[in-house]
Length: 113
Length: 111
Image (cartoon, rainbow over all chains, first blue to last red; front, side):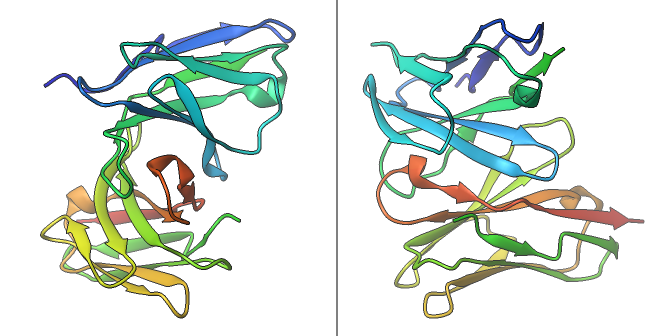
């Protein structure tokens, strides 16, 4: 069974640009959650999508958005990039039922210069 | 509200024991534990639910004190492979996406 795939693995962007990250969940999983990981801050929840609908949202500005397609693949978009957006962005997939195991992808390392 | 993990870091010798704590200022429905090795994705260890149910790793034990809104992860007879950063995620009910993770505890096991 293939794991969670995130693309690209590494990305360098300039301040003010926008970026789109992709996450393909495990086959059959309908829930995809996105997290931002920075040194010292742990994993900060961005949002969760389930069956193409945003089900939960964390405390991030509106520059961070996402969507989910009918095949459960999800994309995350960050507009007007800031230096502080440099981070590892992780997505996690699960079946979507409460309190079940989540499977994380390897992440996309975004560097904003 | 982000849960607070303690200690922030711990160094052990192989065979020693460690306890990692996770506490929240809010009432908890569940606590989830993950381990992340350097350069790798976080990996699921365990879920502890209100009411005492646990799901997860056979070789790792944990407790969940609902009244104190705390959980502890017990690592006994540590092995080199236990090294990594441990995160607790607290659930307030509802879906997986409602997990709020702590800042992590970095565990280093030395030979």
